[in-house]
Length: 89
Image (tube, rainbow, N blue to C red; front, top):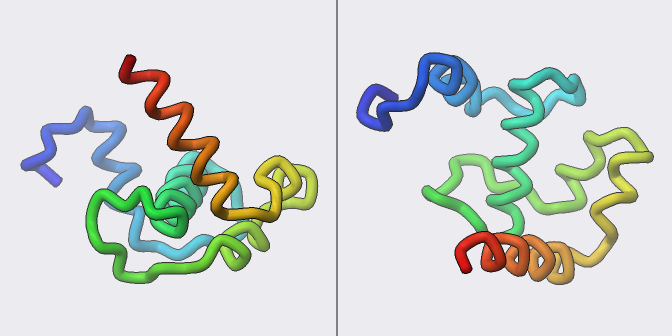
């Protein structure tokens, strides 16, 4: 973690990424969920140790939030890629 030279608050959060998605929603859970979602959609930065599919990840969300993601992983990945690409222009 030290090699990444992250601010102290990020080190604390990133050190907890290996803990599975539990269904609780604090800052740690949001980061874990986001990383698992990115991995499942093909946006991994490194090879994940525990690659889950999108449906399994979304099942951990409350119904209201789950509906925001839709049911088509390819469409969700496209939407995310479009947003990322628009930020780099």
